[in-house]
Image (tube, rainbow, N blue to C red; front, side):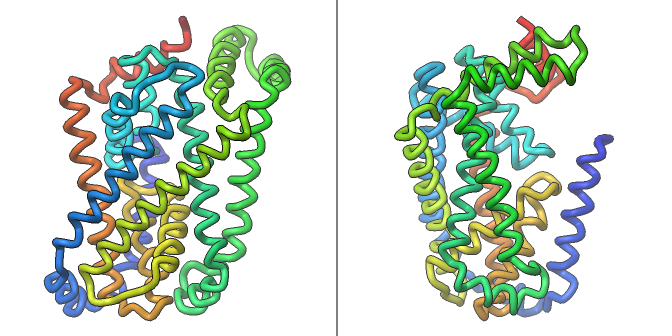
Length: 338
């Protein structure tokens, strides 16, 4: 609670939620929520959990050069991580699942974090692909949202960031010795000598975590799997859309998925409050969906995305007897000292 990142995220979330509610007509909104057919959430949740299983398989695939761990073992840890992202600030769930994986399988945290960062980069690339596939639709969003601004410009900057990061990681994976030499040079010149041994140890384990990307085929497999994951998540958007009284194309929902998930890279309160909701509503409004219906749908979708994975992750975490405690943080701090 004392960290400035938490308060910054909370302030940004409050600002976005203010934009959501400031011009909302509450009567039509409650009517849209009350008349929705919530049975459509069930197939949406089912499709979403298929996507979570594919996420667990992708993580298993990325970790295979370090240790081959069955997908059924990775699935509960993946759920714990996404639960952590939803309830802890600063995406602490990513670190949490790396620490849980070390506890259960002995995989160094630095190596597993490397694979998690790779996941996030490929997710960003797929999100940008969803947006680029719908570039003709962006003019509608720009004209109608009055909030997102020049999405095309933001997309270009986002593409530069994600593709630049992807290129760096691919080069580090394909040329590990060269990456290590550059790392040694930077460590020697930018850090105190007493830290060199530990930082170099972390760096070496991190580079080990990139081993799965040394093959172009493996990189393509990770990209293909990432696309499947996000298409399945868009399927959840599509199912829940049928609970409300509007209809837009699957491609439009892909665009919405891409924009809202890119927006959630902004600092926010836990659960991406506001940063998910306002961009999603703006996209729907651009397609002519009434604000009350767009708001009801987006908020219900957000809850349906947040609650099931959070509940399942909390169940697995309780079953493992794990708490995000000082001892867990200490384990994270000491894991690379050995």
